[in-house]
Picture 1 (spheres, one colour):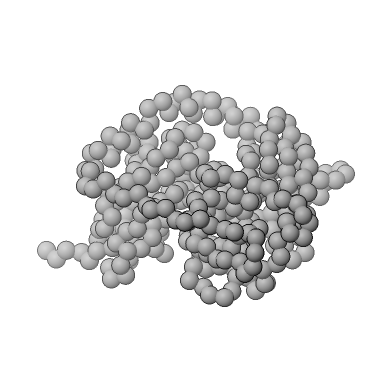
Picture 2: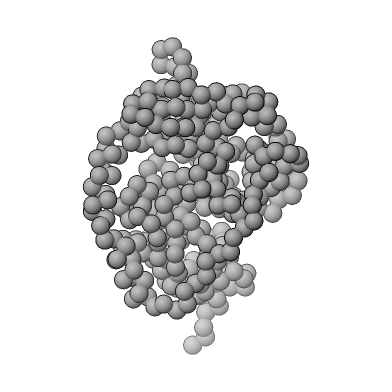
Length: 313
């Protein structure tokens, strides 16, 4: 039970011209002030405005300050949230004051960088053996450590179904790896099978990746020499939560080489092809990410890019 057939990627619109990209980017900012006005008050109010269904959180349960547990938000209602604990899949309603977003995970290997392609297995899929699927890492969070659980939680988007899911380290592996998981532990049986309880948000309840409302819709060029400027036109809500106006420190990765990007219009990024990019490696994957809140979030990008040899003068 896992992934469905992969749909085709949207093609390039041809040589539309840089001026049209700027016009499209500026047009995308229409109504931005109206959207962002209410957004600022929601984020500034704290509490439930900072939590959404499918968020990975640290939930405190028990007497006094409570013991911290890794959990996933199922719903938010006023000053309380329904969470499902990772350890036993039980659910509980807690005050918002006892639920906080998991902090971003640090000190991870390069292949677990946000925006990178990897392979992931759905631990809740029916049947054995489990199947590895192509996926993209969108978030990396770290919850409380408990026993063999290091607290790492990874939000991935499967390439075929376009759905998202929270996974642990052992459920992912580096792209192209055969026969091993992300760590040395064997894949454990699904907790849902053992307990008979249905997993919550980590079972890919939303077709739209959590927290990702931006996507690259067009490139000024899909091939260029090192040092060349490339523009990326974004789609989505510029001022909404998760939009370009709420992001900073944009970064575009050409294969394994990253390049800082600048927002030169409300929905238009500019970056340079890395000077050290090889010109004989063929098309490489483009990955785009930005800082949002305390963590780095991926921006969907369906394109590949080819680094060309510089023209001789």
